[in-house]
Length: 238
Image (tube, rainbow, N blue to C red; front, side, top):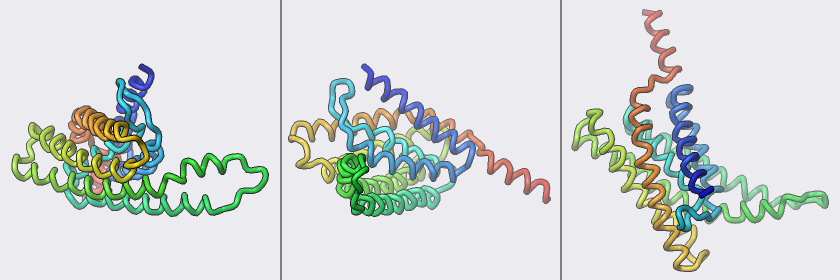
């Protein structure tokens, strides 16, 4: 049960970190985690693990937590702020792909001992990153659209927050899972393993999406420190 405990602990750490960064740095903290999540997620997704008897990847929690970020931004700052997080992460992923491939172009000297490991990890980056970019752009923009669509249809009351949070995330993560796993792993694993990865990847992302609902309600109540300082400064000037 070691992997299962690590999975649950990781969910709490990452979702809790989203709130901590938001409290400390405001919306900039959310942008920071969005970039962090996409970068580390591109590495973690290369590791295949077993959870509760099913094959999946180690990057599920990180990818799922980025949807919490766009939902918080949508809820508190609007569609433009949420779309900005998507744009930041997309730009960083492009630079990440370029940077890792430039590193591999260097010829190692006789004393180097890590180039082989870098070749194994970064050699997968182009395919993984391109798959991630395609899934990320489609799903994150869909998440922002659906969040505000549900908001317009149901109203902005706190009682309906769970509906727009879970409704937009569960649908958009299904799209992300199909696009990403197909482009990243089709032909890499046997058919039964590939199908298992696709199904369980979505299941575990959906679990994280449901678990992030309390964090979404907490985020709505949080008043970030930078914004409190700005409000205090405005009051002093007036």
